[in-house]
Length: 279
Ligand SMILES: [Zn+2]
Image (cartoon, rainbow, N blue to C red; front, side):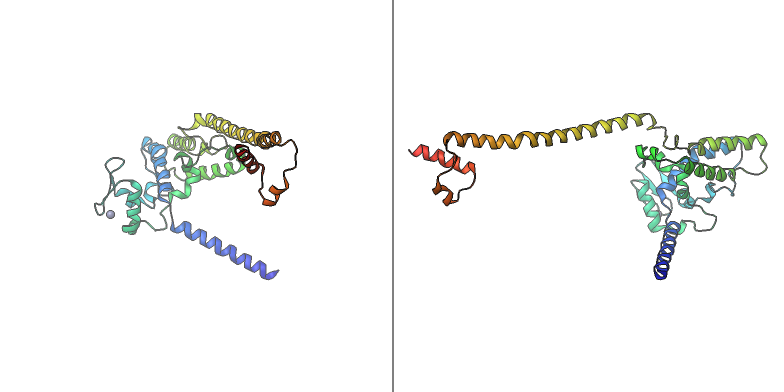
């Protein structure tokens, strides 16, 4: 028993270390980009409005982005023309350019302690939902726990309040807190978590369409099975029996044929036809 406990504790430790190492080494670029874009869209402009900049105490400061240097060296000429500013190579998509950065210019990924992997905050920033990787699904909504959401929202508000610079006027401070909460944290409830500008109105329609198609498939399968069970087999058997019975009112087939070992009604019918033709 003791040995088993030691083994399970060891395995847990190995798993924990592996997971944390993987997370530390790998910071998904696409998810980081989603968070970065959201910040650019709904958070950074608030700071511009009150004429201040995002302080370094804020985890979401653009200066702390792990991929900041590489991001600054992306040159885009439209959605399918991307260039690496370090070596001038061109790519058809931003993803390919990201892979090129990983392969050729990995020295420009920041590893210092103050750098932040934005992808780590994907749950708070709802990046999978906003990027369309995750849709609102029936079970997500049904199984959503308000208490989990409350924890997430508390985290969000704590992180955002660290982004308000010292020495701002009371009004500016209130403005920043109110709007950061409204633009990011307020979505962390079961009701609003899956909201996004695009899909919100279609949710009900999509759900009922899927349900209708599902029911049609289930009923079709049911009727096919029921039809085969009650009609098809009986119909086939009775057809051949009736034909044979009509030709042979006596139900026992001749002995000779049984010895020849011809099985099945169908064979007998074919023989009968041949026999009648000859005579
Ligand atoms: Zn390059």
